[in-house]
Length: 224
Length: 265
Image 1 (cartoon, chains in turn red, yellow):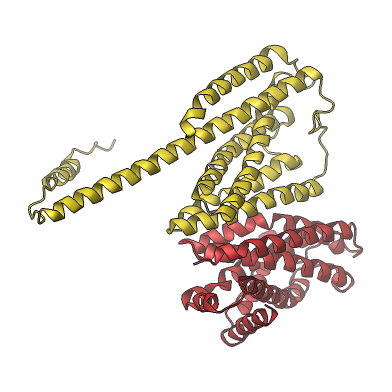
Image 2 (cartoon, rainbow over the protein chains, first blue to last red):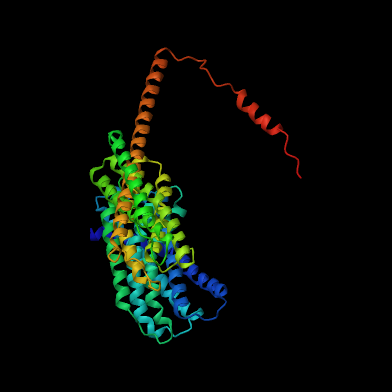
């Protein structure tokens, strides 16, 4: 199971390193969105709740791009059939896909968060970085689980480019709530975290529920 | 099998709805603060509770489908979710009317119940597009079931999240549990809730029965068709099969095109 997961993950990362289809596109999308937000708000620097909301909504929308790309190679080139023929646990496919999405998201955030601090954020980022990193990593865990599930659900539909985002956006509302609420005090100048544990708890609950749900349900999506 | 239960259910629903409306308008006292508009509470809250339970029941039925592999469970789950989506529209509309009447705005963001409902409605609005953009019926049932189970789990999680984000600035006339409600109001509320649940169950039974009948009819028709085709092939296949007159639709379109267009004024 672990060997199969690692093999699929290694394959996905190698494809991504060579073709560079997902991560650069996602990072570019995020930076472009920051530019759009600058003009939309007509402000040179954001702080407080507006800054937190801008950052989180951009990252959540960026996830949509990654989820849309997640099963493309499998569907277009018949990779999924080959994987299903192999004598491996189907959960391995899910875990590998979720892990790949998680790594994509972390890579994108490594670019997008400094870009956000440079382009738009008023207060200094450094003080709030540890708390923000913890929030982002926990949110990425939930996003990876829900993203792999939604990606697999939408991949077999006719209108997959529409169904995927429409499914994903309502499902990430709890993460948007927790992320924006927890980040808002970090961006208000003092950089002190308030209620951080509470929002980390909600994100942890979200990640736990969707990891368990996806592991339980993913087998049923791959039964052909 | 669904037809037999329908008659007593329909009678019970009619009686329950009549009793509920009677109690709402003639028995329950007028609210001191909000006056007559508060009566919408007896429609709005039962509808919300029944719709939520419908979504959860749809998830449970979907789980039964994945466990037992019987398509009937998928059909039950589908009908329950379909009805709950319709009820959810009703919840949003009645909630909006109530908000306008008592707070002066059509939409309030600090009512966690209403906001959660909007999010859940937006999620479940994708259920039918997802379901009907999958062609293979067996896969359609499986994918819809996975969606229904995830949706039910998300419904609970979403309530927790929205409640945590909400700030209570508006005074709440009733607590959600009805603990501080006068007994006459609470009794009326319970009867209205029961009536709404009966409406849901009756419509669910009716829709399932009609879906089943349609499915059986389709199967019978396909069977007859196959039989007729077989007999035709046995006769050596007639070359000149009667065709619908090809001229008829063309004539219609020509007359529609040549019909005098109304003069622009």
